Length: 332
Ligand code: 9Z3
Image (tube, rainbow, N blue to C red; front, side, top):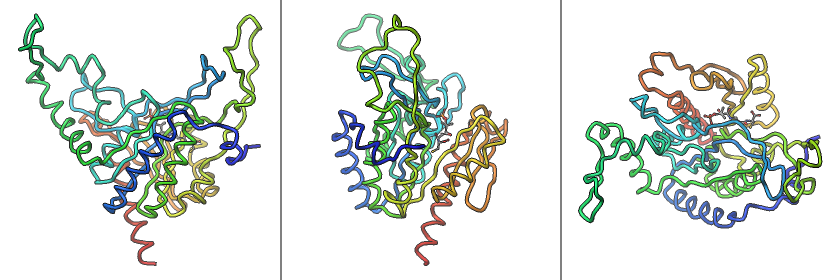
């Protein structure tokens, strides 16, 4: 039996920085709504489930956070690993959407995802060996063409205050932030897109069943009993943002289940689109499943080698579908 979402919120406290995030969400959304912008909530990265209240151990969900962040770069040696969420954020920004990037803490983020710490340092030059007041730091000439386009896009989005970053770690944090985001997105009605790419835990240990302190190995191997996380798409679609364009992702490892599970989800929650993918091939093939159709979006080897990311055509297609959805309602 899946537990009910209302009981979940009644029995699990919000994260300690929840009110700060709620305020940021409210301010960001009010500003974007006044500007009449389209807005997308991208969730990205995996959620954890703690095994202890004072958490030493936790179970994690797979996701690098690529799908949600940005653009593939031209030099493979400077590329960071991809993540759907962070990649998609950059493409939505290019389509002039305001972006709420709700991501797992320390998972990939738009723009910075292209470089990890050491790669970034390798692009810089220090003027003197002995550091003094006249020392300067510059970008190596052969790195400028890599860094400049990303920096330009980053600056444009930051100066226009077009993106808000909020982060979660556990599935409980995720649930509270998702609901708070929806409270703010409701005002956008059909102009809001929810792009739910985070890999959310299906199972967890409820707060009242979790030990307070670190589980002791001296007491023998623990038996851990997990319960089902409530299916949050149900209230999200029917109650929280009933007019929004909701897109969920379906991750499977068995190809035979992929379309059937996606259709099942659409039938159950009545949202607009499921983007289905298989773990191993997610970077070059997804399937768009709507209530009436299903078709593949595939990246050829040549396209991948030329630096194209699958998130670019995915986002372009979602934006086109969202446009159609907006004009269909307007003409009703
Ligand atoms: C996805 O399927 C995402 O595409 C990935 C992206 C997590 C595979 P990366 O972050 O990977 O780029 O490394 N997300 C799955 C979303 C999810 O958990 N969906 C639920 C499900 O499949 C239903 S809402 O049951």
